Image (tube, rainbow, N blue to C red; front, side, top):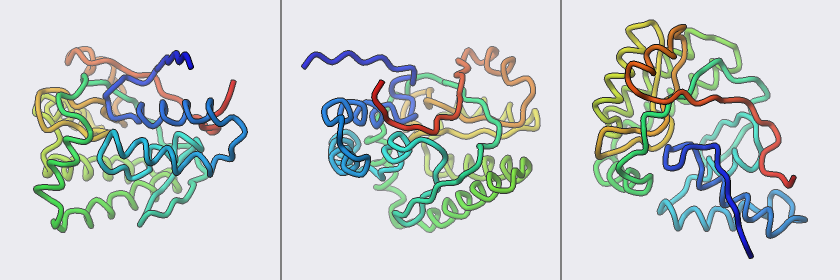
Length: 218
């Protein structure tokens, strides 16, 4: 086969580019397969890349839309997401697999994961009720938790502080990084002059839109 790949997703930024590529290749190779048939081989492939994949990126890329995961189960949220911007802080120095391994080594038995679960539930509630204040509160809480497990580089944390000082909230979207100054994609919300803050930091604003169709053939 001859394979040509064009990605609008910044590579290595924690936005699921590996899941998107894996599913695109599987769909091209298995054009008549049901969506459910693509998930198992996609998960095996992503495990080779990341060590152990949760399947969240794969499921979302496959089906499109907005999804909520809990205990391995998935629920579709039939709502539009709260408004937000994506900011690319640069490609992380460490891979998703390296971040996962470092966090597992230091925090596998920590009670912090229950706190992450509470934040996730609050985020879903904010989307369901279109509650902008709760949305910002959950994003800020999530950022604090990510800092505590060591995946937010100092320059990215400084950028997020500036967003918070302007009345907004921000957090790393992907795995972040346990080395270097860049953390991949950051989600920011609630700031009118986000473009100005991004420009001062030398980061890149990434356009974002909703896709409800998921992986498909053109």
